[in-house]
Length: 227
Image (tube, rainbow, N blue to C red; front, top):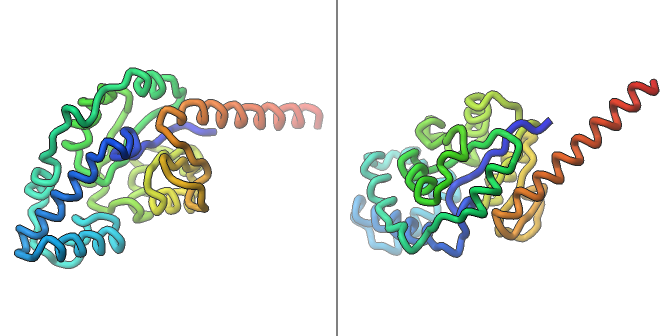
């Protein structure tokens, strides 16, 4: 039985069209360029390589021995304006609170950024826990260990979790260990079980999944009684 729904944060709980991550990406490029005294084009290439190999630029810098002050990095890259970019949506809050499962957030970002976003959107109290990169000991998605740590913290098994994301490589890794996966704003592929155009579509899909699961259990119970 499903017990928990786990949400990614950036470009999942808010739409890609907000372009907030575009701004953060530009700031990551500038951080790398300024910190290591390289041209911005080279910094962008480094970021792309780090993300492709390690999942995040921060993990790449840490793994390859670049001297990075983690607090300084997060403070710089997340120093972005939210007013006029993100807004509270009562429909999102209603949808989240209407899901009859435990709810949590799993993010490759830091807790300060995550809570700032959630509070700005008026949904911070919709989740029992936000698991950030520090809680994961910097083992970010899609590293299988990141999922293992998160599931242990939340006291659930993969089969008990519905995972909602915007990044195919992250859902592919979660699906491989047994989570039911939902991709937002992505074309259908083998990376996930379900594909939705908008975060608000998650509620109806989860209701359908829970209904089907109850029907299956009822059928098993009936068969057991007949046996």
